[in-house]
Length: 285
Length: 181
Image (cartoon, rainbow over all chains, first blue to last red; front, side, top):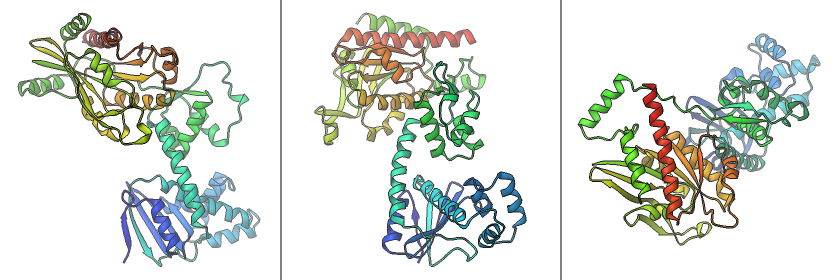
């Protein structure tokens, strides 16, 4: 019988612990708000994982994400390698001298780990473990001990929680500080940080910047938090709604609520005279 | 009878109950319980649901003051308490820098509930190790138009001043709406 449930009740950490201790073999599938991920295990070791659509997890794409292939190279290889398995493609690239075996192993391993670490942040999602189901032989599998994955995942989860607390809202915008000492050319930034810097603009929300750079919520929070701490950028609070004359529809709604003696929780509708009376009363206390 | 509501919020042990107690004409209806968590044992009891104070303005008008529970596990109450509020006060214990991050979180959460005016009360300004209100403004990343006011929650005059400044801000907001019409 398949092991199934919701991450809300049984977290990724607990699932991986179970698979590790019981030395299970099979594939764990997770669905969460239209996102999906799969992790495969052999005798309690993680051997394969991917998230999202199949084409995003093509070997050419993984090598591009790891900086081993340029975007154009990855696109051309992916188009030409249709119907070729990852293993066959890997052999081909090694034979032609485009890449080494070590590059492929490291890139695939990193992709698997990145996928699993992202899953640690999923608080909810339907999961199902199919015992003995494994990826097709054409996939490149690399055995990884789960103990270290669980420890690193838990550490990242904690970091993620802190970042989530520091930057709860990604729909806010950033701008460069006016401080004269905040000169970007004197600061060492990673490639990803530079990409983010290039999008910093009062019109771009943090979420938009993340999408444009294909960064996860965790990654963009970490980068923006670092830049905020360094004083490079500052947050622009969303403008408070400009006071406007109430629309016809809303005044009608208010009239209906008043007729029924209901307080509108969205709009206290307090008159100026009421506030003036409150001021007089508190002054006189 | 028209009832208007203001919410007094802030981190655990910021002085919300005392603030309401200093100005309310009735004894604060407080739902305090003995604290069980050792980490939070800096005072004997804490607000688990809300504090409730009242200021009667006339036969037809009353102001209610609602204090929110400061502990995180009761923050499901915040949204409920914020509904229909005229404005809110964020209390900060100026002597406890370890609570400033939580104060910022509370402030941002309440800001997201409603676009109502608010002020920040820098409490315990009578203590020697209190942080300056303007230092708190920087720490809490307050916009220049948000007022941060020195306060001693047990001193009625400073509590009155905080509420009056909030009412002035509300008045300004109403005037803006009137002008826009």
